[in-house]
Length: 129
Image (cartoon, rainbow, N blue to C red):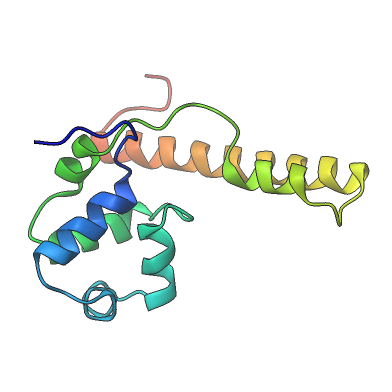
């Protein structure tokens, strides 16, 4: 068996599973209910699938989202790709970069808070727990 220096990403796992299932990208995208370009971006690691999409992909590939996540290398903590892209964009002023970063952070924090509340509600926890 050959070992790789590069960690295997979730997108690569999805692509490999799709290929093992002998499905084209178009076929899997149709089964999952997403666009072909979106699936392509997921497989190339440009976008992360939502939980719903990941579960639909896993079901279509006859596996589980948890199994695919366990196979994927842990993501190194660091700035999200969107912040890296904003920082590197030569068409933005420093103020525009700052404003976009602040908007992104606020939106991400809102989503994180909503997901925590939903998880607590699903698990039967009270807000103070």
